Image (cartoon, rainbow over all chains, first blue to last red; front, side):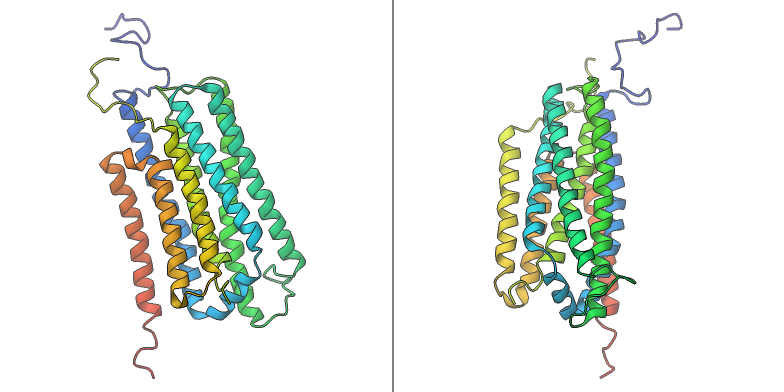
Length: 224
Length: 103
């Protein structure tokens, strides 16, 4: 074995197989499991904010209704659809990576990036409207409706939760650019698509956070 | 590359599965907006959360391929939501009972 040439010990290794794994299947299983461990910490990370939101919502129920009425339901609904569409293109990017279709994977990643950017632009339009209406908590909070201090608290949760979500989107967008480059270089294929799968897990997780944020921040007391 | 002891590398889901899940998610989004505009009494929030939970489950099971993943992955996912449940239950066991016996 000592005079065996490089990579030629028993059989040809995949260039992306790390030496501590038996084979690509085991490596894929370990990567997926590791990503889910990370997502478990993310669930609890966002969970803290959801918990605090729930505690104050039960305390100041009327102010929460008033705060949700200030949100732009049309833009919120459109953004939900945009983000769900970006999850579809992300899932298809993984699908095409599994099939070894390099260009299709690339274009699906581009689509995901465009839809994700669209989401952030629409969110930015909403943020701008809030600034103009004096709904930014802190010294610039000039909104004078009923229960203003408690609505300000609602807006604090609104900006914390959507802001942390948007930060995850921005990180995801950066990752997408890196993955577009790697896909273009032909790194992925049926034997090795774990990184694209894991990128997908991250993106879908961020989508799931929004799936819960949307009803909690936009849909309360809409029937009134 | 032969006779490795592990499962085959992956399950490749058919295209119609992705399209079906995507359309279901859009329909459920429309449904939750529709339901929110009707007075369901105390049920408005439970309905909204139930629809969100169905949507999240669709994403987790099919877009995130958990339906075809290993049992160990299922354990990690269920455990993380279990801990989230502990966080909520213990906190509300405090907040919702603080005024008991004071009136």
